Image 1: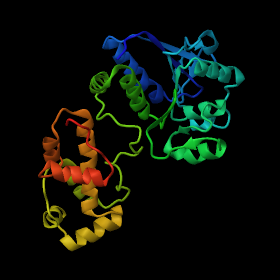
Image 2 (image 1 turned 90 degrees about the vertical axis):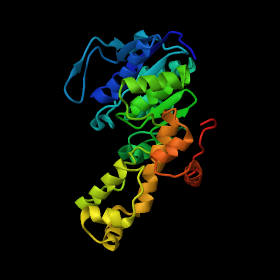
Image 3 (image 1 turned 180 degrees about the horizontal axis):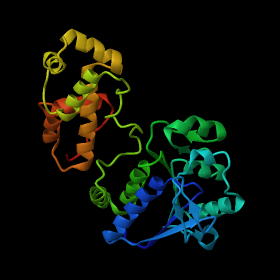
Image 4 (image 1 turned 60 degrees about the horizontal axis):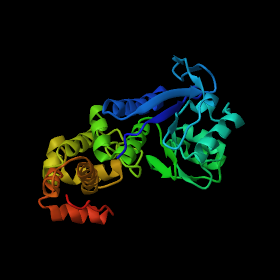
Length: 315
């Protein structure tokens, strides 16, 4: 763990997405509140920029007036997708990034900010990510990259990319954990009322939103009940009674609307809850198993092992 001083340079592109910027800023501001020493600087290629929502950001420092060093961090925020094919940043900006890279500063992007990193050449032959809707364009526009689907954030040496919007917060918390340890990152997450700390390999779409792209209210009711009652056991007859249809009909409709069975859906949710509790709580594995609806920790271990997740030692 270290408390040495570092500067975080937030690069403000044209048509910046405010949430891409503000979430990450708050992580480092909370780090300062915990006693760490981060100097937050807002830089751009102009002295003021208008966001994609119309709000103007002024008093910016021209990036050429700065020289990021080894312990520093550069965050390139995301911006409107309408800017993707007309990026105004040129050689001067890319030279600045390459110099920072040579100095071993951490260079990070949020959402569409990855397109600026890619244009600079710093992502060539590296694993990286951006918003899931833009992955194919990312791959087509920059064929030397290794874009990762369904990934919240990536790290390749000192280069980091995140998928977009709130995943910038996940990446910022990961940077804090790397530098100051898990306890500091967890404390900041709690202060920001972040539901859970997510890993880079977590899928971009929340498991709680998956398998819900349908309009059947009865199936939504069943899914909601399962989500809020994972610790309880329930058979198909009980669930069918909740929505006043036959067990056979419920089984058929649920699979038709969601693409998976009720048992598979419940298992997905239990695995997600177990992984979150294992990573972000002090509970013993026996208690976590009960909270997830398993009678014994052995049952939980078997399920997690089947899904290639190893329970950390000492829990």
